[in-house]
Length: 107
Image (cartoon, rainbow, N blue to C red; front, top):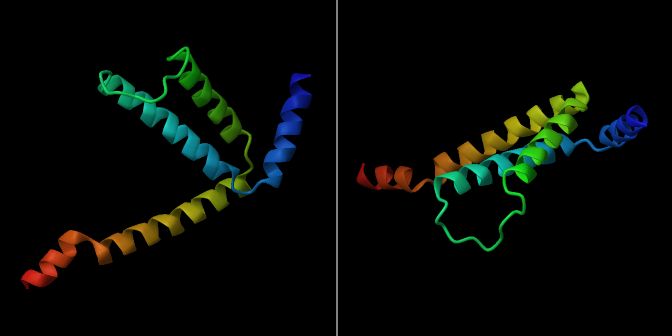
């Protein structure tokens, strides 16, 4: 049963090319939220996760399971799109940053 379930999940993952990006974002968001909750426990929040340490830990584990079942082709797509996105982000930021505009005005 377990092997059959993993095979079904693997078949669906291969059909979805950008799942690795979505899983990586979920992983990042889960870790970020957990870190913020530890650093700022007094901060007001609109939503509290039930079973606080266990739900985020389970989501991280499941994200790693999904990421481990991705094919190399999906990982290559992920890193190519990640590189393109980071290049656009940094090029746009460098051209439109407030500090850059202040330096141009001062020069």
